[in-house]
Image (spheres, helix red, strand yellow):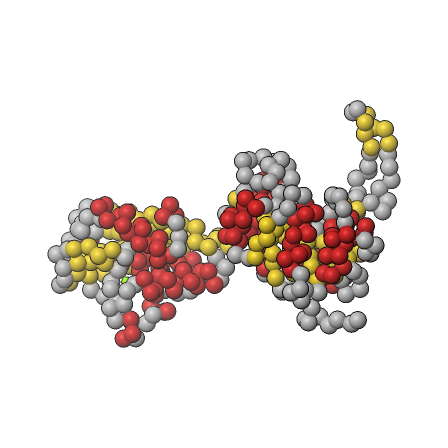
Length: 382
Ligand code: MG
């Protein structure tokens, strides 16, 4: 049978059902946070983003399925052993038209996309394919603290994942396999399936020991793209009985003048986000010449800037906004402002700072001619 690239359906099965805390900590290692996301989230995203993978399924321990649900992919409850978990995942994928399946350890969060591609490519000519690294260190056999053998390293490989197979063949192999196996290559070979070795990668290591978390964090953050943006805005006082500040209506002796609702704090934060993305300012995205934005709720602008950050792959790490005025007093409203900004931005309140200062009665803010605001935003792409 000949298959043409593009017509094949490939599923990735991420095995995350282990509960072991061998690597330290009080939660299973796949749910530990490293560089802002769980280890499982890092791993899943590599497969979700890969052009040759159609579906990603995570096999989680039955007690962890609620945590796993946050990954945004299909979750299957695993079994008591690694084999049983893989089998559960394969059974869930059966009859859905998959030609290939790749089984991957959740704790290998740095598998290069090229390794995934190589495994899939090798499946055009082999029923199984998996990455391996030739052993370069000399090997010893040891007993009671003494070297008692020096086996040859020729032809010895360190096995990695993803291990790829023709779907029907590996499902049949798992159904026929009794007892435990170290990996799916062992299950496949027990069923007589040939498994091609494709080049593995040193960075495709499995987080196993306590020190591996720091190694993973270093590798992930080494590629981190961190952006800072600042925003500054001023609106003058005019007639009115309230001001809008960071989404909160505050009764006042004057109102703020502006094309929109004149929420000076929200404008500064919005401009800080646009600034971090090198995407100009509010005026560029929402021209004041456009009557559509007359009296607009400034949340429209802020939501747009947040959406643009997401679209460009950034998450917002924090924002810090300072309002500069003598009146109204900001302190009593700061908590409500933080909550409202949190709702609009989809960002936790602990990452939102809203504070105020006077200008000691100096300058235009001191003379109460208007309110100024400045803001800083940090955006991170991993
Ligand atoms: Mg403004």
